[in-house]
Amino acid sequence: MEKVADIASDIGEYIRQQRNTAKISLRQLSKLAGVSNPYLSQIERGVRKPSAEILQQIAKGLRISAEALYVQAGILDLPTGGPVGDAIRADAELTERQKQVLLDVYESFRRENAAARPAAAPATETAGTAGTTDTADTAPAANTKESA
Image 1 (cartoon, one colour):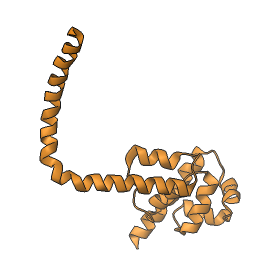
Image 2 (spheres, helix red, strand yellow; image 1 turned 180 degrees about the vertical axis):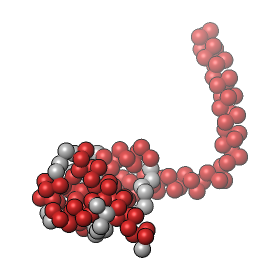
Image 3 (cartoon, rainbow, N blue to C red; image 1 turned 90 degrees about the vertical axis):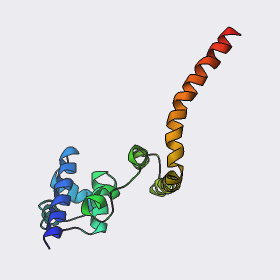
């Protein structure tokens, strides 16, 4: 039960921070999100843990990703993909569906490469050494071109 209270407090604090950053009053966010002022106040204070639907409404009111709120609330795992995933999620030109398709394709490539990595681990070490050799090979080739 304590963990649920911590999550509610964390999501409430996160919403408050986002609201303050956006310079929106509690009352304004309440109207934008279609959530009652007292209920929103309870969420921010950690008294209530909002549903995914309410989080989506709040995210819309704050003009932030609902996914960000879901992660904070513990509904979703922290997204993977690093800066590429972040860039896709932040792109205002893409629809949510387009973002999800791009993220799915990107993650499938990452999983495929990760699965291939253990088999290629010795080759990677050799490649690191070969990279040094390649540089040495490239230098004479460049000299040859300059000489010719």
